[in-house]
Image 1: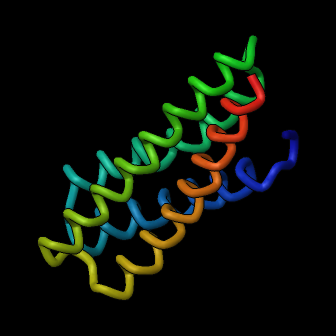
Image 2 (image 1 turned 90 degrees about the vertical axis):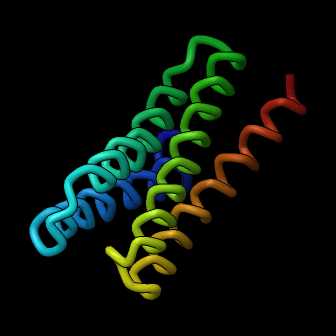
Length: 117
């Protein structure tokens, strides 16, 4: 899993999330929800990285499960930012879709890993 698709995609998502956070605080002056988003979106990749170094198959699944939850939470904050008009529909759709893509990959890995226990 050294250069796996989930590792690459979650890293790309984190980079985009950090840049989005910087834009939200500088342009929109939004500091609370954006910080929550930043924490969850960067946690996705961090937990994927922890899964790479898991001590067992159960630990691997557990770390990816945390990553899955953080990805879903990131989507939640995007939905709130969109519903409160901090971001446009286009900004929302693009980033939400990227989160959803990573989420689907993580779910698929978890399902496959559970079957292989």
